[in-house]
Amino acid sequence: MQTPPDSGAPWVAVVGGGPAGLLAAQRLAEAGCRVTVYEAQATMGRKFLVAGHGGFNLTNSEPTDAFATRYAARQPEFERYLQHFPPAELRTWARQLGIDTYVGTSGRVFPLDEYKPAQLLRAWLEHLRSLGVELKNRHRWLGFLGKSGLRIHEESTQQETTVYPAATLLALGGASWAKTGSDGSWTSALQTIGVATVPFAPSNCGAEVEWSNFFREKVGRQPLKNIALQCGSQVVRGELMLTEYGVEGTPVYALTPTLREALATSQPATLLLNLKPDLSEAQLLDKLQRRRPGKSLPSFLSEVLRLKPPIPTLLREVGPPQLPASAHDLAHLLTRLPIPVTGLRPLDEAISTAGGIAWPEVSENLMLHRRPGTFVAGEMLDWEAPTGGYLLQGCFSTGAWAAQGILHWLK
Image (cartoon, rainbow, N blue to C red):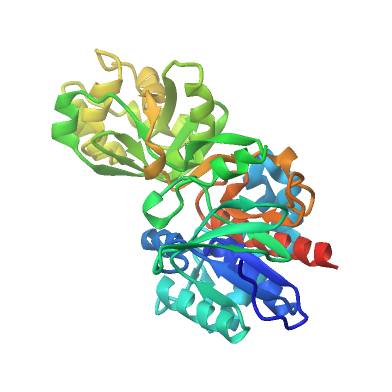
């Protein structure tokens, strides 16, 4: 059994050294709690660092009321979380760590170019230590013992210890990018005490298309810029990447929930690709009617619409056997080119996951009903959001909200 020296302040254990857990640890320490963070990996914030490789957007400048709609399935809850720790406060938090931010043209919020994810994380960990937070790497949580005990395995000694904090925050992430420690293995420990979980599913991931061998060899991996993608009634603008397995990119990621729902019927889902979303129907028809007899379609599309390779190859791959001769039918094809999706990429390739602890299992303050004094935050909960700063903001905001819940409970 292990407890920290008695200083009269309540001791809180945070399990998981990602953004949700670390922000909660900071809030709790600032409120006077003694805090220990247990992390199974060799370093804190590994997924935080990996997320920064593709463009380190911390949050988004979108107004709060619109921001909350990005968490569509749990919008009322996230409205509260965002009001408690909004994007503006996240930027202030970064500035207090010495990291200035700016708003990009897409509305995403980034650290200034001279700052890297590792610099922000290093400054953050130094600040946590200055607050007295104890950071313990290579300490894996194995499960519960009794009403408040946590079984902790220390890698360096290969010994198991049981700790008894006054309150616990679990912030162990979802099930994507297992190499960072976010593997979802914690579900068995929660299920052991009767906590219901929703099976994990990939979110913000690529979609699989059964391209022909000819298409794979000729096209390979190429971007299609300034397009619009539609699934059901949802339309998303951006850049699409054609890959050897199918398609990926921000528009595909944003449509993952709709695609997943369609694929649940065990039939191929369809993405409708608009290659010229900036042109009205009348403008597109006007341009297509300029085609002269004898002019090849690839040459015409390249000269008049700037639709260069691999567009002609893509049209032949997923379009009708005979491409339309009439301007009207060709316009319809260019704005609603069907791409049949047969599946989503595996969990470990997904940027994030849907699924996790079912919402009826937690109180308004994110405490487990079945284990009073144990709270959860971040991707352990069953929510999802698109890329663009919404995922990180969701983790930060739920971490801050859970910390507030812990402080109320301790009182």
